[in-house]
Image (cartoon, rainbow, N blue to C red; front, side, top):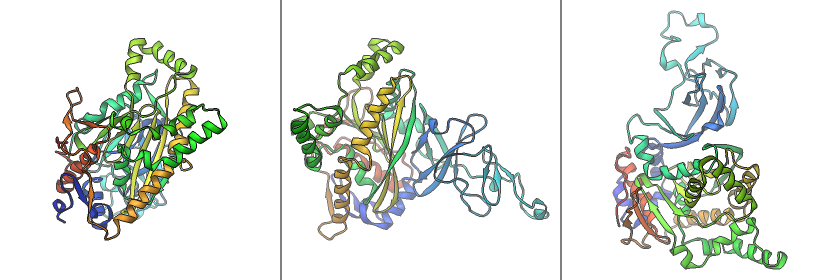
Length: 437
């Protein structure tokens, strides 16, 4: 396929969203080579614990070994092909078992039934090809575990560099300096291509129109029932109705490999709970450092092509492409270790109001994603615009580098497609860097 014909500097061809052939290449060249988020080490706290998930279309199992190491295997018995673990979290009691074999926690074959029957054959218990197959590369940073299915490609430190500060801030907000997954996971299957979800995360052009029904409902309830008060639950809905100048005054930052983040649109209230939390953080790191940590106020960070942390309210969204027009989005909430228990309830509230399947905010977005997918499938035009503020993005002089754009720029979307083009053209992800428009 001629990838070059699908992308221009400020436009992309609709085939990138609707072509089965393009989707197949993405699974091979992007999800088969990039560093993909797998899970957090708090999901497997003890040896034998496991978490089953996906890298692209591949089912994989993340597990903790007897020496506290983290292994990631393809979810397949090497003998008959059966899965070795069901979906979600579980515990193995020391061995992975399928109907045909048993394996140690490090993946090595432990035993098979009727071993005598394998005499004088090429089968060998010590032969690595009869043990569980590990993914090519695994790396972790502050508990967040990533994997790459490719032996070669970008080093993890280089891949993460631009958005490393977001992960630092995510964890530094915890008085103990660590976070842990809390509660279960929300799952939403969206009837749209996986890239549409990512494009929306740092697009400030959509909230006023897309979320009009939800923020108007919040304001109406506040006025008619609460005498104009906006409690936290309504505050985080109302923010989407901010005037255009508010959105343009935000900053958008873009980095190598398609990553980006935007400055925050929702701020935690200055109430007794926030003051209690600040005191717990300051007691551990000092008042000046606590103020410095909380001054880093970001909305969605995009770690392309698989996840999006929200540092202010400890949310983590993961995308799992299912097909060219189906995408699974998983939403995790995290506990700030050492913070007041009540703060976790605020995190749950944010997740329920904004990101849950029953959210009146997320349903706005999911509806628009589906409408985009339906429209892109028609013959109404071949190209999709990414023109807004093109040519105006500038190199960022801060320590993180990258590019910076005004809040309403489509910089993050153009940046994602620069990375997309490099992955799809080479399959290596070695040079997916942003360039000034």
